Amino acid sequence: KSLGNQNTKHRNCFDATFYQLDITVDEKKKYLKGNVVMSAIALSDFDTLQIDLYANMKVNSIGVATLNSVQEKDTKFITTTSYIRKHGAIFIPFKQKAGEIFKIKIDYEGSPVEAKKPPWKGGFVWKKDKEKNPWIGVACESEGASLWWPCKDVTNDEPDSVSINITASKNLVAVANGHQRGKEEKGELTTYKWFVSYPINLYDVSIYIGKFSLLSDSYTMPSGKVLPINHYVLTMNYEKAKK
Image (cartoon, rainbow, N blue to C red; front, side, top):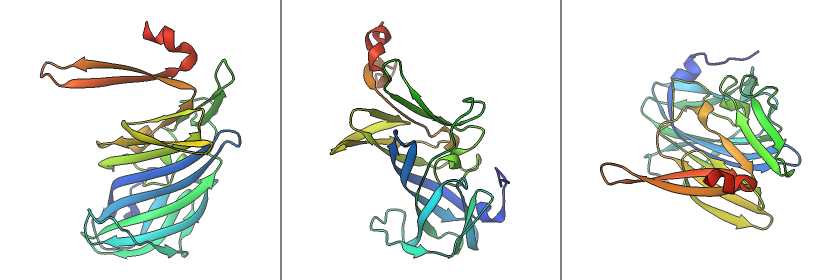
């Protein structure tokens, strides 16, 4: 069973405004591990809210926090163990009054559903390119983003922005939506930091990991503003892509 894209009182009571997604992708084990922090505002008084995550993904911990302002940086999460998982949803007891700002942090891990016939039967895609390098992606328009990360998985509540930090093997490149804000190398791993500065539907939040090279170009608009145009192509196809 699934609660799908239904509007329920546990979903309609809050507006998700921002997500920070931090995940490590293990291409050998086909495994994800990380955490998501959701920032939101209460639209009405509630004592329980719903977050979505496929039942095969494990929840390690859930923290909740009420904030004094949106700009508050040092968030102190209170761990809650009284949540209930049912039909691909997580029901979290958490009292809030209308207008209050809060955050939910979920640490999770697992092997996400594999796509049987992307994009029509979606999920994670774990393939190899012609040179046998990992070639990883995700397609979840029909199934929903909660296939691989915890979120308010509805189409009528787009966050204002999303931060996507992907950690993968250092010999691979991780690409996501928005603009790259940098990368951080640590041992055998590299974290690629991406930021979406505009509203986005959650099933459109995507990651791609592979042996990619950046092909940069730009377009000067009539206003004079320069628009960067970046394509990430398989390294073996770089010269072909330039043409």
